[in-house]
Image 1 (cartoon, rainbow, N blue to C red):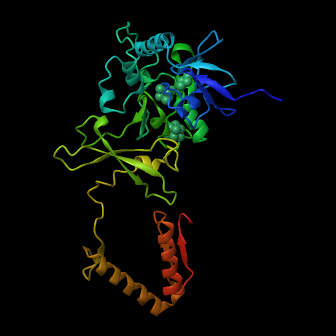
Image 2: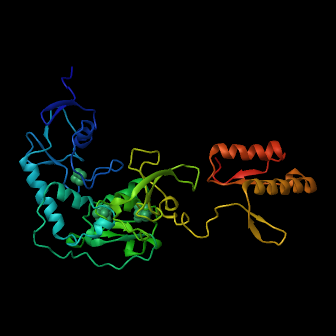
Image 3: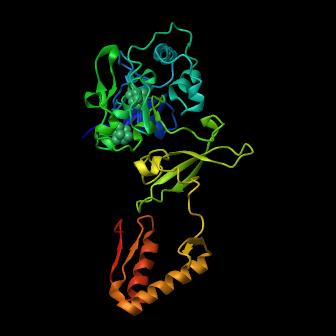
Length: 364
Ligand code: SF4
Ligand code: SF4
Ligand code: FES
């Protein structure tokens, strides 16, 4: 009979684990926080950044908790003077070839690296080195830019592109101090397999992958944007998304960016597509239709009430049916409609107008 207990000791407390649990997952389950930069629960562990190191009794070296599985009887310490010294040194080293002026971190996406360095009081006055990999020309695409000097090579973006999007448009390239993120042959993302999902922006902990679209009408640091949870209306999948809205500041609130809720919290698991993430400028567009339009006898479109517009549409459909028969009509509904709305459209088509000519482009 096996005398395995499937228990480990975590900071002096005995806790159960399941086969395959990493130390990081186990710590999270038991409310113990371990800092991470390269970890993403959707990705295979890479153990690249070394911020999550913990001490394990009997192990000479500290181990990356994100990439080390719990095994029976392990005695793990997540906070100690040795770990603290290691984190301070590591983060100070990361900062040595990071841009010295990080004021744009206050207006761009919050930088997890700087936040963590501040939290652990890492030295910030170590001699600064110009990163050798900085200065690649800006990519021609409209949505995504890569700021090489901010990159810490955690490979979250490349692993996301490969493991979640299954696109592999970007990967680590070059060697040593010249290592960077690149497409094949350093081509533009437009000439690669990139689908412009923007997931690489979402996962980047330093703002090295970032949006190109300006935060229009935004006088406030990005940290002051509030998030309004909504459902994407581009297709029938129903992804949850957060509209990032400027504070009132005496001006009308403005949507300046779209992000996805964190992985594991909604059905889209932290992912969005190009439409959901970037196609939001219609919201405040001056040409956006806000009332129905009905063509008048003068041949021009005029604003109308919903009642009037529905009356005109119904009369037009009835007229075609009377003159040419039911099958001269066809009903196509939008992929933005819900299943219930599509059900009503097919009822209208079949029960009211007597035709099976009905389609919906998302085929829900
Ligand atoms: S936008 Fe999406 S597909 Fe393109 S490189 Fe980034 S993660 Fe890959
Ligand atoms: S661009 Fe960001 S996510 Fe990608 S490797 Fe660099 S720091 Fe990591
Ligand atoms: S989070 Fe574990 S090594 Fe980066």
